[in-house]
Length: 294
Length: 290
Image (cartoon, each protein chain N blue to C red):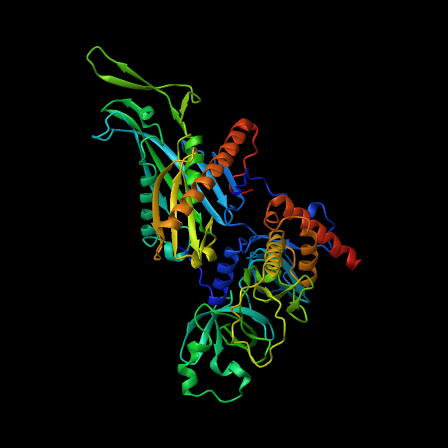
């Protein structure tokens, strides 16, 4: 049976007016005066005009002693060493791959920074260079860690651990990098039946939990078996919950996603994206988070 | 057309999901995404509409101008379509979007080439001399998959919203005709959009076909069928796109699905348009800043 739902657009009311907020943040828009005190040093996102410090981006004002900077809410990913990212291979070059990670420049994955299939540890030879496309092709998704940052800001990645490598079947969700909370671990096996990788660059990968931990594989053998329907439902529901949280600009971490998932269980998966249902489950998840904190 | 690059495993996941009637966002194969329709968004046009179908955002404006009828149809007015895709992505800026724009415009001409879709005789003022020409401008604001369906919904909504001023033809003693526009700005004629068709795109993924494909789903489908269906379920035109091939049996199945889905699409759209019109001037205008 075909289902076509059409509606008239409604002015989006901000969610904040109903739920209590935790701590006031100084939000500015481009052109807003931050301070007229000349003692402050200007940082990123600010400029000086007529002895006034003015914001050049829309975001939150952060102050460290005498340094004032504005952290933009919607910005490209800025790499930090140790971050876990999910990226897509865009080019295969001579001794490296170019990876798209939603940053200002394409990230780089050097041939010397990957693990070979089977877990062998050896120096990469010329044959490996010619066989690069057999390991990673254009369009493949990988999970990697930031190894270092070049002087121009481009990020160099490595997959030198068995938990990183080529990703198999699953769903990718792209969100703004500022919505992903920094945590100890970004690989989560959620109790609802699926696993999720929260990349710091805003790429979130949802995939079915693998049954056994295959250590010898090294991450290159893709499992091409059809995913069972029950796992698919969990993955689709998680994907819709993440989209709901993003619509209301909530921080994404394992607990918030789990609470949102549990709040959405009474509804059908495809109904989660309707504006009224989205609001209801995000409010419930937010309430649970505040209750568990306080 | 804007397309995403996917890994082989992702494509496999989508194809298997479609086989089991559970797409990535939880929809079935015949479900549309939630659509938002608003008319009368551009003030200096005769009729306008904006449709948001998931990520896809379309704006249509219709201007009614006076022109001379075509030679082969002297007692009818006509429609002119123009599609602009330059605001979509850097590769479609300037001349880049021309190919996609002309492709969409030609499809629209084909869909509306059916004689009864719009009552063109009502657009005639003086046979062989004056008629109304409706210039339909389509603006592709964001491409999130399934642009043809969204464009046809927006065109129908804009035609429903179009108000053409009433004109009187006065004849002098010498025989020269003068056209007089009525003073009352609300004295207009409305077009009858009951027979205006809507396009339903059916994309073949694996062994099944889906309606309202998102960008990743379009990347997995090799062939699609564009069917224009009227509210009564009559198919007015058909077009196959994509580099893959379609089996004749699957074409019949897709046509049946298209008719079914098209009828429910028209019912839902007409309900929304009637609801919007019944609210009249008390409707809160959302526009682009909502």
